Amino acid sequence: MEQDAALEAFVGVAEASGRSPRVKDTREHGDELGYRAIHVVLDWAPRKAELQLRTSAQQVWAQLVHVLDQQAETELK
Image 1 (tube, rainbow, N blue to C red):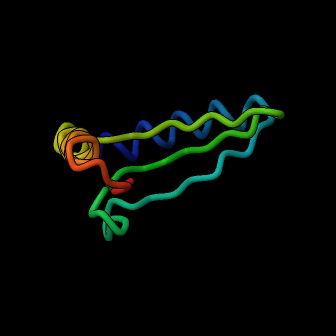
Image 2: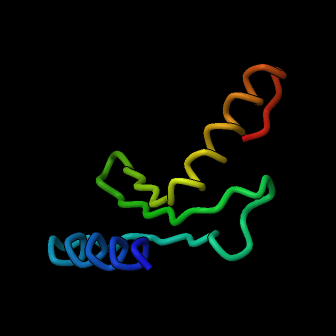
C-alpha cells in the first residue's frame, strides 16, 4: 500500500535525524467521526509537527467533515 511505503520512508528519515515519531493509524477502525488516516507526530521542541497520510478518498471525507462542521457551526472535529 502506498501509505505504508510513505510512512516507512518518513519514519526512516525522522529516525535518521535522531527523532522518534509517534504514529497513530486510524485506517482500519477510524476515529469517532469515521475519519481514517495515518498521523505522524514529530516533537521539535518547543513545537510539534503532524503529517497526515491520506488516500484521495480519505481526503474527500476529511474535507466533507470540515465543511459540514463549518456550515452547522458544530464541533465535529
